[in-house]
Length: 366
Image (tube, rainbow, N blue to C red):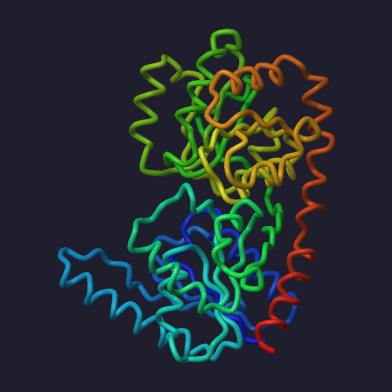
């Protein structure tokens, strides 16, 4: 079967990582796979398998005025349509809200089955009235909407149940043992690690505030935050204001985060909302207990509270600090959670995801 996957970019992000993992899985199943990106290749973070056909359109330029915006969007739709048609797909799979809408609009009257995927809680991540209206118009025309968690799916009950499906993302850890030589990492300290884009959604301001409540009691601990994003400058200023520059490290994007995770004591996140947070599962797979806010949607479907991690009320900085202090002081409890953490790889295996995708392909091409 010929599968064409459509995404905005291959930059460092959860949905982009899922696309690469699925592309690898589809190749293993014997499918031909093409990936179309709206961006060019210059900002790629992830590498696709060599057997994947890549078409990079480079049509994501910003528009200086309304007239140019209309013109650019029409051009974008035409270029995307031509690119997808050139791959002669049996099934088209699109990734993430606005790209989903663009893909469906571009393929009107072509007859291709289009599967759109949602990776975040749309009740929290609001793209604006126009995009929401377009979602309501385009999604009923798709072959299926795939959500990455039950929480994400719950926002789409306006679609018939036959139009919706939940397929959890597969969790696969591939790494080398090299750890980048970053001078701000103190190998003599114990590490708490967090990872994600430096955005409002990820709640790193809440995590830093929670750590500040207990930091003076634990001078031998560092909070290491992996990732880049629009709030870097703001977070750096906040860290300095709290006097934590020697204990909180904004390390940027690291090519091999898993080797760093394996050297940490536990993982912590304070996201305000999610979809299916891959980093939670990847930390568990590396044998780390995970502390997370019980935000919508996803953490509760990955973390088993008090079995392999700890869930705290969403936005509760004091509860987050208490949970962190608990794992920092109780090595036995930390190890008990760590012992169960790697079971996540079985619960969210690539084989399980592939079985569900194969059944979906059979359904939509009937």
